[in-house]
Length: 169
Image 1 (tube, rainbow, N blue to C red):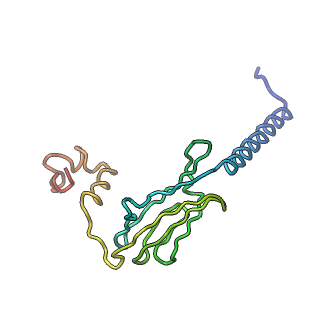
Image 2: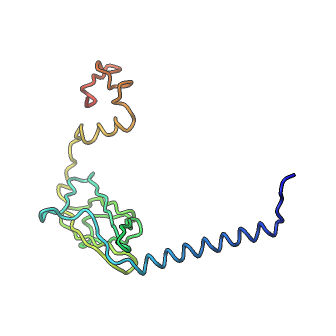
Image 3: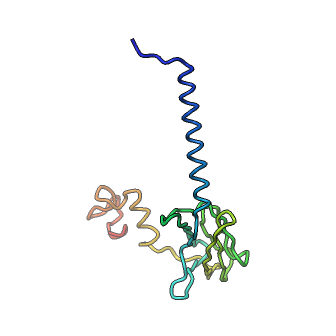
């Protein structure tokens, strides 16, 4: 015979578990806001040259990291982004930057009206699409889908009339 618990005991256990979960979440959330001291944003300009978005199809992922009691915590998706001047780039809530016009823009990343960090981004040649680069644009797609492996187009003689040199091998 199975050991059965009364429905009341089961309800009490679930209530205690739910209450404890809420307390842990509230404690962690409050602690994070109280101890967040600094944040940093990447990419940063290297040798006084800001990251470059070249052409209308370019894109850039921003990364925001906060320091909490000596530990690095990713805040990229809970950050508010502001670009000055407006109209040069668009930044979505995940930190993905897309170019809109040529120019230089200053990006400010701010967390809950607290600490902030800044970086610069340069946009150039927005009116001209960049040519497709085989090694940078196509080979990663072949690799992701396994098309340049030995069982597909990666055979020494190629496959389906596509020679192996045409798939970056």
